[in-house]
Amino acid sequence: MKNSKSFIVTLIVVLCVAAGLFFTSLYVVDKDEMAVITRFGKFTTTQQPGLNFKLPFGIDQAYKIPVKRIFTEEFGYRTGRSYDSEYRRTDKELREATMLSADLKVINVEWIVQYKINDPVAYLFNLKEPQKTLREISIVAMSKVCGDYLFDEIITIAKSDITFKVSELLQQMSDYMKMGIQINTVQLMNVTPPQAVEAAYNEVLQAQQEKDKIVNEAKTEYNKKVIPVEGEAERVVAQARGYYAERVKIAEGEAKYFNSLYEEYSKAPEITKKRIYLETWAEVLKRFKNVQVIDESQKNVLPFLPLNGQNAQVKEEK
Image 1 (tube, rainbow, N blue to C red):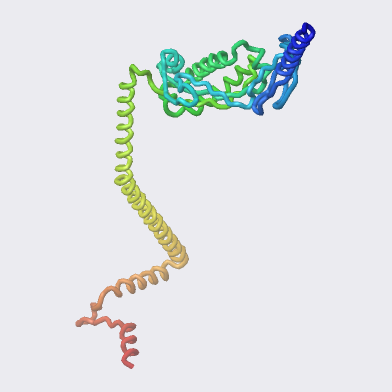
Image 2 (cartoon, helix red, strand yellow):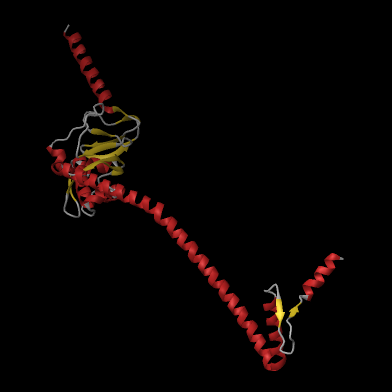
């Protein structure tokens, strides 16, 4: 009887040891994880996804690190659990969001940082609290970059530049501290003036928009009235320049003509003078219908007959 009881106890002990060996030596690593193995607290190796083996009874410890998961840290606000998207902001989040611009104005900046673990060993051993450290250096990086921009720039045109510079600076800081993380995204979620001056700022913004509206209306009216007048003025100027060029060309041609006459005149003054005299009379007489010639030796008026015209008339009658 005693032998049977001792056998049962021994069997139970053996089964317990076997179960302990089984459950403490075999483990499964998920497909998005990597296991970091330590032996008596010292790093030994890493294990890939799948069924793996380690020394039992706490000799080896396996730390499963999700190396393919994207983590998100929120700053200046909280949305709670993944299935609860309710927006929350406490005094702590408000202090996170408070930044100082280059023109020494307070501004509230809400942003997120998305990252993943690219070196599980460094992430596990180099820093005691890597997530907390990441949050602290993210606030430092955002504060530094915002301090390089004016208040109006942060709210309007500088958001993309700020996110790029914060992401770059944050990656440099994490690499320097060997955190073992990769920064994927930095995104500004909301940028507003402090609540105490938000109403006044909105009034200023509304006034600025009204000013822009009036300026745009004035530009439209200017385009309707001034631009057509300017076009007409340019047309008149171009027409005047054309007329100027035409008159200059005519004057130059007449000058060349008179110069040629002068050259001929200088060669034969009497003949040229007589020719010019006759040509001039021919041009003058063409302008009159009836021409009468008066001679001192004649008592009566002698009519001047346009022979060329008469000859043409006779030819037509024939």
